[in-house]
Amino acid sequence: MYFKKLVFTFLLFASFLLNAQQKVVKTQEEWKKILTPNQYYILREKGTERATTGRYDQHFKKGIYQCAGCKTVLFSSIDKYDAHCGWPSFDRSLKGSIEEREDNRYGWKRTEVICSTCEGHLGHVFNDGPKNTTGKRYCINSAALEFEKKE
Ligand SMILES: [Zn+2]
Image (cartoon, rainbow, N blue to C red):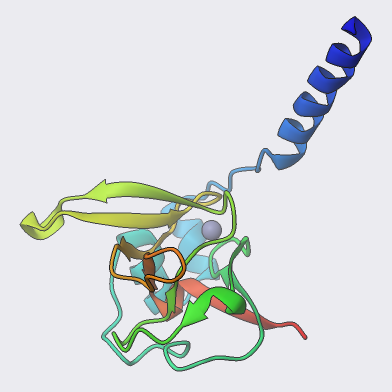
């Protein structure tokens, strides 16, 4: 009995270590070197691209969406849907890949979503998503994402 418990504790600890993500931390100058000015504006200065201008707004190919800053996989095309809002929308993110934070800028209470690895700004999450799945709408800037095709 005791042995079983020990093994269980060990497995729990091992899986924790495997899941623990290495944070990506860079200076402003380092980010500027690897990001385009638009990516920098969105990811590092919490900017928002103009509606319908992003390259992934009406993009429904099969694959995965990575963080444009650190390449962490954030979303799957399976969870992408057309919310007709002008930005790529997903009803869920991949487990542990993003963090949510309260955002009260402009006197408007919203929930900001950031990449949990590099803390880059991705967009916001709203509660007006598809009722038949999660009810969430992750409204993400195309410039914060990088698509990779997967069959
Ligand atoms: Zn990132």
